[in-house]
Length: 115
Image (cartoon, rainbow, N blue to C red; front, side):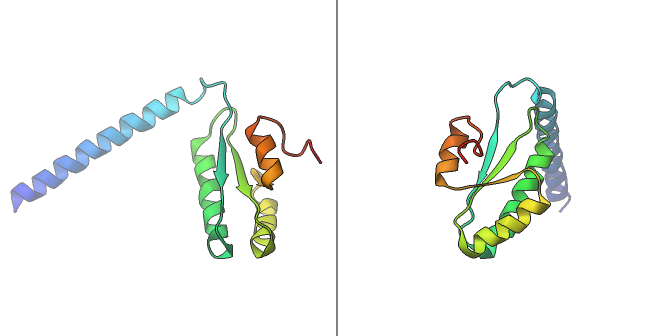
């Protein structure tokens, strides 16, 4: 039984060490890129829309990139669109994009320029 406990402890220590090295590398290299990152979220329906967008917003905040990562969500309209509209007021980094605005955003243009 001790061997299993020691093996499990050693495995967790190795996993923790790898995660620590990964985290340090990510933090040290985060300010060097000149590119821009967009985290694109596509909810499949109103059931998972809020949870998906909130999880993505937390991920964007956790990454803390420079320049800041943009959170874009494809707006299918209907009830999901209403949920996204409410979330957009709460989460200032969220951008709702239609299909034509998505093409502009991926091309590097501001999605609001065409309006």
